[in-house]
Image 1 (cartoon, rainbow, N blue to C red):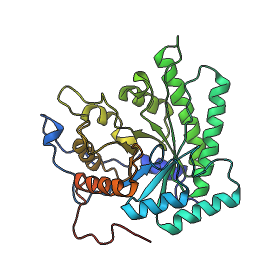
Image 2: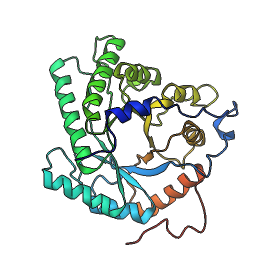
Image 3: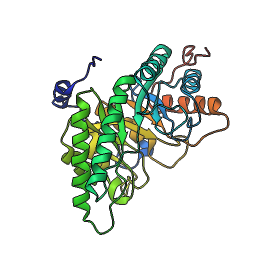
Length: 307
């Protein structure tokens, strides 16, 4: 297969500077201006909870009916996009999404590299590379991996280095397939700390090793702003997980404005609990996202596709 992104292209992209962040009011995210109407951010969904029991066809139907552009397919779920798929099944999955106009935003794995057992880390690296090949075969641009804690009795810095270097090894191999490896800001306090995520990123030292911002609690400073933590990784954000954007639990407007100002043009993926009226709920979600990102317009007759 041919891919438009390879290791050389990743290196070229790494040398391209992102636009500087615009200044925000220091008082709070509540005074943050909305993102520009030209925001290129796209709304997708994670199938971790919402969509976990849906087939690929059902996911595509939900996305088209609600204006959702793409999905991060979580492994081990009902849609069955796994490394066990044979060549024909991979080709059919790629065609199914391509022909529908709904993108596979990425493959969401549970691969992790914190173990103190070198054999386990090596097995996780090998599985991650297999998922990267799967992503390439089904037309996805990336896989998601995660840090998941510090083994008891080990120094934090030792584990951060282990995770980061394993991440870098996976990314180096995945670059040959044109695939990004996105590390989710996840796990215990030590591994989801943005300063430590930055350390892992530096240990990885690969241009296609990028960060999955996870909109976690505790990322704000004393003024309620996430800017200082965002600035640590803004140059390397590959995708964003967002949760209940209709609830006052996170500085959502500031996040979307910072993303826009940083030049981010990827997916913001709804990682939310299942709702018994998924179509109705996701239409509300899409409207909120468009309002936050300055993309709302009316009339907008093409936003939903009932076919």
